[in-house]
Image (cartoon, rainbow, N blue to C red):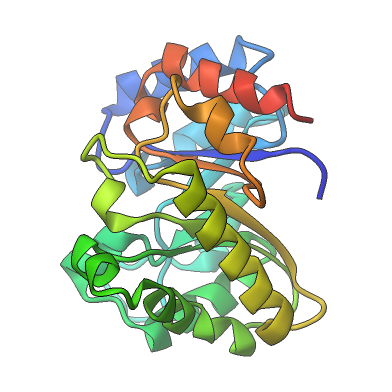
Length: 248
């Protein structure tokens, strides 16, 4: 696919006012108000933000989705149908923080992927290794095990985000050689194991900043970025989008 995809993950940050102010800043900037740019906001702010994004190019994403497909007695859950109903385009699935703090496993993530696809949205499957796993040398096996659910997902477009866990929120960034190695390995695995109909892009996520975005986005097999902390600052996020825009 042509061009890069940039998704800002706000995580558990902002309040109603600051969320709206941030989105308005992005909408006012043609560098950010693009169909290949999205923001994944906290669930409680998705509906009002969707109203603000209506008729604009900037896309909306959710940070999680329920593994339960149908409405029912699942207190606290938000279904894929609900997210689609308010206008979400992307859904993060299996972010390292969900895996770490909420013990999300492959069966649950497979259900979330399929629910998202069935609702007509694009799931973003997050994969990556911890520092201990990298140092032990088995990091590719860890990533391939996380990717293994892709052999069972339904047809449709989905995205993979490689996020070295040791580089998230730490200020550390994988070297360009490390990034290229993993992205190439992921795409090779997908060609061999994913459904031929799959439409796949691989993003890099791990302390992506304005200062390093262009070099990362120019790295082999990097199709975009999943941006954490820098997406909370309109100026920094703009520079990342600007770097991506040069490569379209």
